[in-house]
Image 1: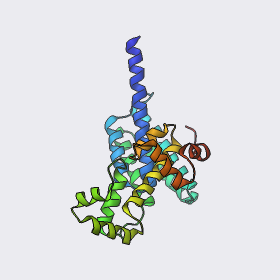
Image 2: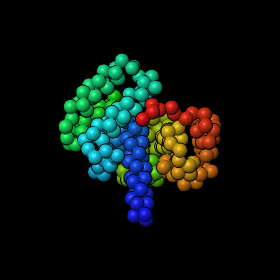
Image 3: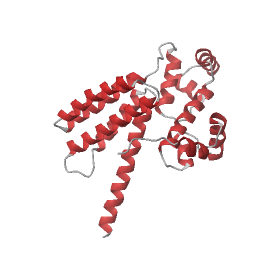
Length: 238
């Protein structure tokens, strides 16, 4: 009995970890962040598919179809043309249907993420190399100490120069940019998960829950709890 309980707990932890990676992929794609989406996808591939079926290829096919459905749904929810994504979905459904190996499923997975990231990515070519590197670092890890001093040290440049450059090119300070990104991701987590507020705060790099709540209310004009209650995302059923 003890062994069975341990196995069940292990499966629950694996399922939670897998969902967390899927959430990271969906968020990265919504931001056009191919690097982050690719990193999470590579981790899923490394872990492997551990579902309820014996056939891993079939498991991957089910997962790819659900992921594609979510991507199309969210893109259309955000105002993108349904006609375009209908064609996009049909093309990938054909590839998924004909896949005969796990390796083929992996290739389809990577192509799916790459195509959606390319479609969602914002144009950063107007920014200087330094500013682009700051933006990329913020996208990759919101839990890092993303301060002006941190970036100046990492990039080996004068902090005053970096501050002025970032403000000149973006119209905001580094702190304002980072806070905006953190609150946007926090809003996504509040809509799409049931995780406690303190977990959401930690996921976006803020350990003080009260400070997080103040920042969130200032940005969204409501507390995290109110936001979760009013803005919960409705997703297609599995």
